[in-house]
Length: 381
Ligand SMILES: Cc1cc2nc3c(=O)[nH]c(=O)nc-3n(C[C@H](O)[C@H](O)[C@H](O)COP(=O)(O)OP(=O)(O)OC[C@H]3O[C@@H](n4cnc5c(N)ncnc54)[C@H](O)[C@@H]3O)c2cc1C
Image: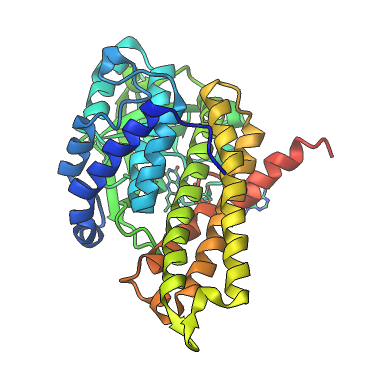
């Protein structure tokens, strides 16, 4: 099926992102795994190429185009190379900037956005805590007002870019009696006394992304680092999660699609019983199903991207795109691994790594169960 989502400007961006993959990312693929993070030089190089600025207005160093399809086409390229890079760049360029652009004061925008656009300042967002991520309204990190500052105590976990982050958007409870209405957002900066990035967590997949715990021990955060009005943190996150979820959906489809295309080639070449394994009817039908699943899912996700570009994507439709694409991605990659036989279980094969990398997409940014809860609520049952 031809896609109708991108025009020549988006395709030009895809070409330059693909060049960046070959020139800058692929030669460092193994080094990123060993370091469990993306090199600072890579962040700066990506910034120089303008890959981080599509949600940032021009006056703060971005491209300010206001067309989400540019974010989506980049996500497709990063996911086609490596899911961890897609995740780290996605949090930095796609998830976090809208918080500062929409909620930040003039002074905050001038201070942080140019550095995010150039990749000099790596940013993360800390919502999830050791006590739970699904029930965001129950978060326990506290921020208590003290003169012209807030004193933060608590911890966050599983934070993407958390280890090397220079800035972290942190959700904290500022009013214990008001539930979801008692949560406020703050920007915590590297070097603030009492703020510690814990170890890089040892994950099942995506070793290249630095996922960390964050600790706040009486961190004095000036009121000028409060992001948005007091008590509106929860609603601010709910308003921006659909963008994170549609971005996840784009990632899920592109990631699985790239491995599926490689698998089709493998099935043409690998022989058993004197014929290519793809020629057995069982495998031919299986591959036909996988291609269908990917293309049909891609069409829905494309529609979500277009709707989001027009500011029309509902939180419920974003939830549908996110859980469904995560399920399809995992089903497709499991079948691709099977088609590779024993080689599929070897880390040197991309399919093996992709299969491990994909498992998290049913969990993060709102688990599949939470997505179904949101969709179910909307049915008025
Ligand atoms: C690699 C990685 C990167 C991440 N990056 C970030 C990040 O950058 N920032 C950030 O803030 N968080 C991040 N997360 C956290 C992620 O968003 C949470 O793990 C996720 O929201 C689930 O929260 P939890 O792990 O506390 O599980 P829990 O909330 O404890 O849930 C456990 C299980 O119970 C299920 N469950 C919970 N409530 C319900 C319900 N009402 N109905 C049915 N089932 C339910 C869940 O679906 C899940 O299966 C990341 C996680 C991982 C693994």
